[in-house]
Amino acid sequence: MCTPEELRTLFLFEKLDDDQLRQLCRAGRIEVVEPGPVFREGAQATCFYVLVEGSVVLTKLSGGHEVEMVRTSHRGAYAGAWTAYMGDRVPQIYNSSMTVPERSTFFVLDAADFARFVAEWFPMAIHLLEGLFFGNQNAREILDQRERLLALGSLSAGLTHELNNPAAAAVRATASLRDRVAGMRHKLGMIASGAYEPATLQSLIRIQEEAVDLVAKAPSLSPLEESDREDALGTWLEDHGIAGGWNIAPNLVQAGLDVAWLERVAATVAPPILAGAVAWLNYTVETELLMNEIADSTTRITALVGAAKQYSQMDRAPFQVSDVHELLDSTLVMLSRKIGSGIDVVKDYDRDLPRVPAHAAELNQVWTNLIDNAVGAMDGRGTLTVRTYRDGDCLAVAIGDTGQGIPEEIRGRIFEPFVTTKPVGEGTGLGLDISWRIVNKHRGDIRVESQPGHTEFVVRIPLASPEGDHDD
Ligand SMILES: Nc1ncnc2c1ncn2[C@@H]1O[C@H](COP(=O)(O)OP(=O)(O)O)[C@@H](O)[C@H]1O
Ligand SMILES: [Mg+2]
Image (cartoon, rainbow, N blue to C red; front, side, top):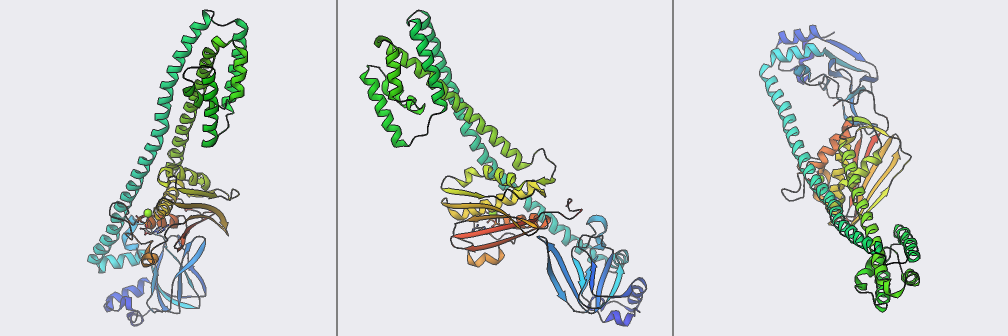
């Protein structure tokens, strides 16, 4: 039985008058609950619970585990549909799960009654609470936007630079190629005028085809081997009276040709036309090398554009089943300039991991921030490790670095907004806060272990998402 006297002993109701307490009693009810679950996180919030006797435990699902938030036997402790007074402007769902470890007694109000009482009795408080709630939410959104723009700005600067290099290389190579092709047209004129015997011409064409094959298979040489070979070829060309031999030698070396090959050319043509023949073959080699360069550059551009598309998930649904390795790879490509050449990137992927349901572009934001932080901590030199593995029902992504470690004094607070050790303009202190919220939205968690020389952030995402998880 609900009595006004009993309700008055609960701190939540102590300031209400007799009439209000009577109304509460009439609308609500006293419920005795046996040990076990009372309501589940994420379910429609229909009731407001106030503990009269016994104890409650509130938990939240994180990384596939129930994490205990509160355990109390404090009379008057309340839980459930306490945001009902905001109506349909916020999702009316339980934001944690409640269980009772022992037989417990509650005063229970339906959400609609609770909302009505609060609205009637505390009209001004509602405005203040709403202001606080939505004000906070707005500030969050504006700041998130800013952090995202900062990240996007630095990514697009990096990407522009990355695209610029191969694009400029392709343009340069095309101009050189035009030059060489003009040279070859000129040579063709010479050949047509009968400068070469038909038999010689046949052999030269055979040697030319061989050269093209050799270019395709050219070994990569150490700088020392390269300069040795250049010396040998340059000397040979000089000895055979070929003008400009020292300019030709580096091309021939790059194409994988050597003195033995030149000897075969010399054996094929008469000495007076050797210089012309070598120059002609050099054109062949050069055009092959230039075309390779153009193919490499344009392939690189295509790969970068592909990575950018994958990274931004441009033409994909926001929530879908994703291969985390594709996400990690595209993020690494996007950040390659930032990572720089002084940092070794070690990938240790468990390719057997299944794909996971996820907001892929948002997870990319998480990797971006963790990698950005890791790189920032290493000062241009060290090892970045990106590891994936299975951890129970979760997929784990570990981002490790060999940097200075998280400063002692902020270790416990790094996931809080605005905690940063970076100079103004460089860090916002929002990266880990946003990352944490994104991972939380996936019902996962982030942990960190850090000491000087070794820091590792581990993100865990449940392999199967609970139903109804795909909206915000
Ligand atoms: N891998 C890491 N190594 C050392 N310190 C780190 C690392 N990751 C994060 N931190 C620390 O945590 C702070 C907060 O990180 P974050 O929330 O991403 O904000 P921001 O990068 O803008 O400073 C950083 O300023 C840095 O001091
Ligand atoms: Mg950061």
